[in-house]
Amino acid sequence: MTSSRPQMCMCLLKRSETDSMRARRERSAACNILHHDRFGGGSVMVWGGISFLRVLARGSLTAIRYRDEILRPLVRPYAGAVGPGFLLMQDNARPHVAGVCQLFLQEEGIDAMDWPARSPDLNPTVHIWDIMSRSIHQQTAPQTVQELADALVQVWEEIPQETIRHLIRSMPRRCREVIQARGGHTHY
Image 1 (cartoon, rainbow, N blue to C red):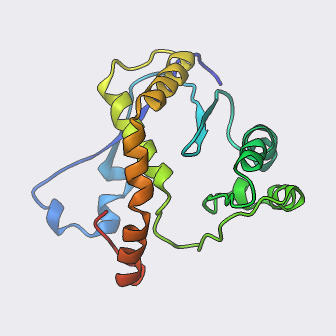
Image 2 (image 1 turned 90 degrees about the vertical axis):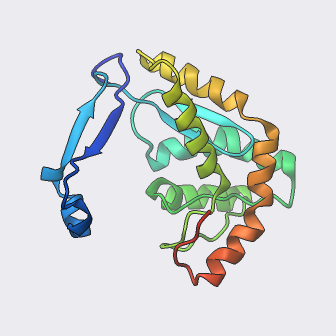
Image 3 (image 1 turned 90 degrees about the horizontal axis):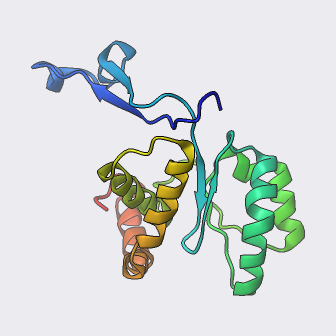
């Protein structure tokens, strides 16, 4: 980290009367995007599951960090507490599918759900991230990395259990919608 202040970036698209006629690739062209840094540097990496949250305040997630800071201290004991029915849901992010992590899961007897490469993201945790992001943006912006980490934990703890239950219960319906759409766009 080069600064103790968190970096929060917003990308704003330049709008014009011809916006609706622009090709999709033009809308995303660098000349049509304004980049605005609200703060000066620093970041946090957040990892979580439906039952727990971990804020890592330094660097990016590598396979070794994922194994040593997430899988070993969090997932392994949680899987042990749940028992034989535990199934790890993770996407195909590089640290998740790295050989060192796959070997660790295999050695620990932790089953992971197969995740197709180009699948819609049905993981209910993604919806939790959205709830957290909206909540953080409604508050006074954190001024330091520690304030950001603290705000994330506070928002996490304030999410009602019923919201989490609803997301989990909606999985069968959302899976059916994706199947009916043959993997295409759905409205969840």
